[in-house]
Amino acid sequence: MSPPRSLEVQLAARSYPIHTGPGLLNRPDLWRPLLSGRQALVITDDNVAPHYLQRVREGLHDLDHAVLVLPPGEQEKTLARFGEAIDALASLRANRDATVIALGGGVIGDLAGFAAACWMRGIAFVQMPTTLLAMVDSSVGGKTAVDLPQGKNLVGAFHQPRAVIADTDTLATLPPRELRAGLAEVVKYGAIFDAGFLDWLDAHADALLTRDADTLGEATLRCCRYKADVVALDETEQGERALLNFGHTFGHALETAAGYDRYRHGEAVAVGMVVAARLSAQLGRAPSADCERLSALLQRFGLPVQVPAGFAAEDLLALMRLDKKTLSGRLRLILWQHAGKAEIVAGVADADILAALRASQT
Image (tube, rainbow, N blue to C red; front, side, top):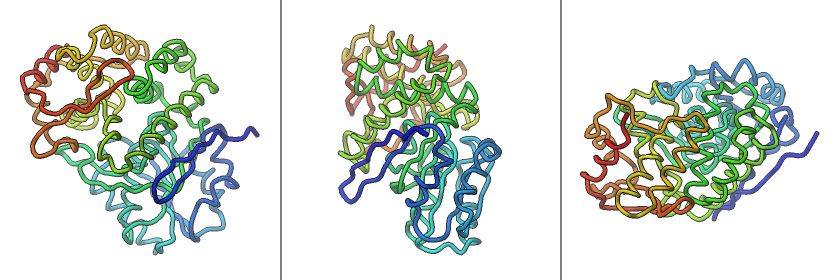
């Protein structure tokens, strides 16, 4: 079996590995040493469990372990489901050296990680992402949270995983819509860090959409490297890490307005990135041609790029004010100077934000 591609997330207090490649869920020799203690709770969902849960359980056969299977979807990332995870840890009588395993996409990773952060003031957890979006973004960096009706990811904690085990074989069972949603986050890294990566994505778009294993593996590793580098510099998002939220302030507002069940996260982020790029051009900060280039690439991946009719710009702006980057009542946005170079901008006038939202609406 070919060895996994690996890199380290280097933090001030410790480091942890990201392993990506085919067949990793069948490699307990790789991930079992990363577990602490003799207890484990696997948290997954109804979509993932039939395909991959048994593989993980076989690697845990000699441990005291339990399983919590939740319904799928962003609408399930709630305090109530978090309570079920805490109840499962209590039923396991989990000690402080127990490990939570997050087997699933970004929703499961966020929720399981938050439960691990809170149980006995913090126990170990391992990310086993099964979606492209989770592999390239949410599984790395230690952001954990649940949503509220008022806004996305408002209750959470920074809690770094013990490791990330990204088995790219799991992408074979990923629905096409979920694959496309993950590609939005892949595009994001080129948009904010590396215009050359946007060229690479355009050249390899067909291979990515047809799930060529080598191409997906290369894209995943490159994105993880971008993310690991910025997390190492700014673990708790006090500065540069906020750049990773390009498109997210607009996208989160759209998700919230739609009740968390109409859009995949990556779809909303795709729309949000185009709005952010359009606002940048509108303010004279960036070339409008770069906005059109970004929009064309996202559309090539089958992603939405416009705010749908029926969502009032004023309502979306009100939701944006609950964004976690807002400081002292001032909304901070991630805009860009050009493709490959993002920046944090405060003090953008409401009128300009509303104009960009309206110009982006179908």
